[in-house]
Length: 336
Length: 212
Image (tube, rainbow over all chains, first blue to last red):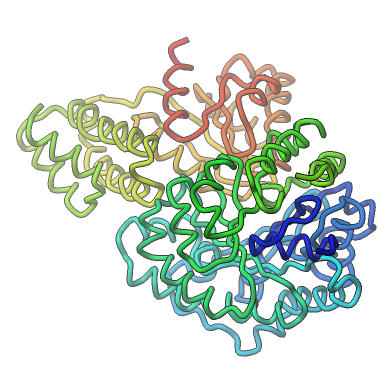
């Protein structure tokens, strides 16, 4: 096979032929201060302007050496379009929502023209720009928040989880089902704009909610979402998810992006034949505080364990040293 | 253990928040001392909730409902405790540091500390160094608990400790820290007295810090 970044990534995403080396990818943000400065596209502009967004995404490939470009650096594109007041942050600070407009679980009126809302448009335009520049050579990854994460934004995390705990399943499911079409519409629009795959980030996080919550409430919804999205889907759920790996494989996704808390060998053994695995270099200890050698060793461990695509476990801290990010690509360059 | 206490404990552990009022009233009517209702009922229940959380048997949604149930029980108990002079053991001041708007982790720690009968004053989220330090001077807590969920806000914890030192307040208060990006190495590096990896560990740490 041709060993271009695109081919290596797409083949690994479907568990196909191996080229000379594993691909390194970023289903979640690898934007860090050094990378922003190196390419001249800084937060908050890189959240708001499609050219800056595309430039920062491209820097992940051109400067950090990743085989993918992923132009969405926040978790708030959808919540902004749905009425949350977003503080878009600064080069040192990630965006954050100032309010939860549906804390009372009132009906969420999804705007008919939601794809035209500025926070959606910017991502779609950035993906189109990337398609023109590197389409077919570098894999372009889109990203959407799932309805569980969107419910945190609409109702407030603690409030939403309290309703889950109180057994208010009807109320909780109603909220999720109202938000599900937003996830599907944004994912399909990103694929049509030129994304090769989309990440479905939905924070039914290990240690936060139980596997039974996922199985009973969210899994059926994820199955509907994955069948309605017209392209490859990568699931991202943080935390120690050892207790629900098989459930994720049941969701209909093509790959699961996982954290270091799940041992790479265990993940491969348990679900490696059913979905591709992407991960799982530790962020706070290794990427942020470790040396390039530490990162390299952890990435090599994941490669040797059989992880299909090597990546940071989650959106990286903004002060992550660029040299550490490059060490992931270096580990991949050294082959299988 | 008396049946009325077992009922209270089970109600909190299982999050039966609608029944707790009646159970607490029943226990007091039976002449059970408030201290026993507190220690063997409500506090023991939250210890059990903590254990189940640590073991991965329950998760945050169930913990939130148990905390709600415990709070309702405490509310019924409050007038009785004042009369009986059964005051809480120590004061803990809690805050999520400047720049950080995350409050769920801190809130769970607050609930567990309250469940363990500490008096907790919660300054909320995005609290700047000056306000934390002023509050320490004014409220004289036994422990200051600082939370950060973002790697970008971790340095604020160090700033709080440094400012406490400058103002001569550092020796008056124990400082404990927590939150996803921090660990015991970081705690040691910035001169905190301890790190709790979760709410259960925070309660354990607070109890330990007060023994010294």
